[in-house]
Image (cartoon, rainbow, N blue to C red):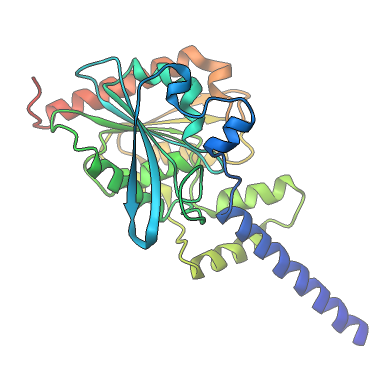
Length: 300
């Protein structure tokens, strides 16, 4: 009996430690800061690749400071494109691809989400407080009424973009690369990849995250409430964002469509189907801009 009791204590302790480790990793991702890039000989801002830009910040309640890069696009009358990175990434993610987005819009906006990059203080929003942060960013843009705003997001950023599109009428279109249904999904999938118990550990971690103010939101439920074009890009071999989730999100959106990339994982979609995906993104931007113009905006 004593041995059984000791085993129970040890098993419980192990579960608690795994739950706490999962929570900590989720809320404290690796920081890809400007210093991180400098130490690796990578560009630290758009100026390092000869692209003009302005820097500004979003100040949010609780002393949260989210840095932003504001880059002019090549189209004087084009849409504003807002780029939202994934978990463990930062606005640095977009620097190698800046020209691809500049040619599509009048401005390109990149921010660091909470707990990522050079944002302060620590503590990732995990798709909850990030939604209000993104809406606050859109309000700060002071975009002309006739200018469409399109949000492009990857993984966490894709999920945040769809959640925000259900809450504000200032998003006219979304490109969502590898979105997932709820926060529990990437937690569970990352545990599985490590060969760890995923079901109950991820469930317990979610309960703990609720306690500290990270409320899981349903991306599918949000997609149902959107009325803007949404392009979902997914890989059929994605180990983090299950293809079934992404397809369900696209199906739930009234104006959703899906591009499936055979053999793609969580981040190599353009490597395998670049031309097709570029065409799909261009079509989404065209549809969103046309819809915005037809919604009553005074477009010259």
